[in-house]
Length: 417
Image 1 (tube, helix red, strand yellow):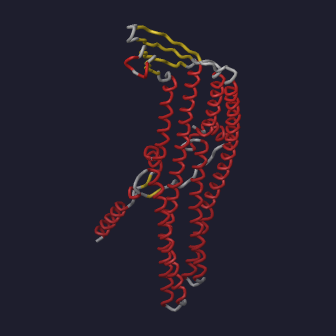
Image 2 (cartoon, helix red, strand yellow):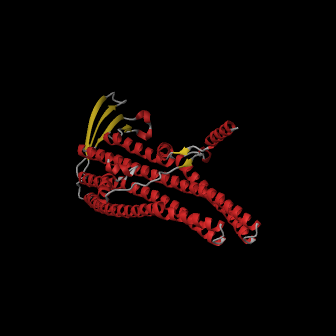
Image 3 (cartoon, helix red, strand yellow):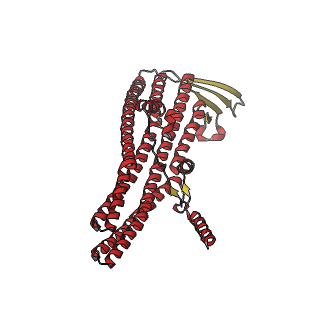
């Protein structure tokens, strides 16, 4: 008989393990998002388009070919004195071309930084949705535990009521609590569905593709120096680097505006034929632009002034972004530290004491030393503290993701590597 019981228990355990949902791994979800996210793909194409502009800047303008019939009496083409075929090429001043190439390269690098910024933003959104899912599933798990606990309370109350030690009111209170737990379960299920929908959107997948459980480590590690994080942010923040490249691009634009005072050239060759006289021959053509003429100097000077103003504007924006970055890093750093301390307090102090209080109150209720309302108070206090602990953990992880987005990294551990 004992062997049969053991075999039954082993079979039951195997079934339970088979029914366990697989775990959702955050790092795998992030990798999928970086590959499949449609918004990020659009930014990748912007990078490709910017890089494709560089060889365009190195090339000359399209040549121009013209055909002319000259000295036609009465617009009769067959009586034209000359038929000329001309090929003309505009050649920009060489330093103008090199400056435009440099500007295109800076724009491509800036597009890459914007792509990097969008990448860390997508990572932050995945982490935020993941921990919202974790919170919803942890609350569902807590709800199941509380339902089982409340059923135990109901059984105790029913037993004591059957022997006349308490009134029916305690039984009814336990039944009401069970009904309220069912209502809470529905709300948590909606939260889980919303988080899954957000993850599905970020990964460009169907919500039905997610059937796992979000997990989080039992402990939190956050032991960093604010100066170390700020230095990392100033070096690697994509948004700040993008603004820095914008300053460089505006300086190149200012240089190009000054180069516009230099002339461009035009060269060509023309084939001349005369059906009337039978003449056949070639002509060479050359031209030069006159950007320094007195009736165009105002326009050129205005371009230089505009470029100078753009440098001042982009420099101010860069400095402001730098100050905002350092401020945001300090804000998220302080908030992360605070939330970690709160989590540790829940984990090591508040929750154990609340659990001990509930155990003592339950024992006292079973022995008739306290009433059901006191038991409910102890139960509700423990439930509230556990839910607050779950909420604190989610807020910590989301705040940490915000901090990682600001400094431009996938994982905060990169700061100390």
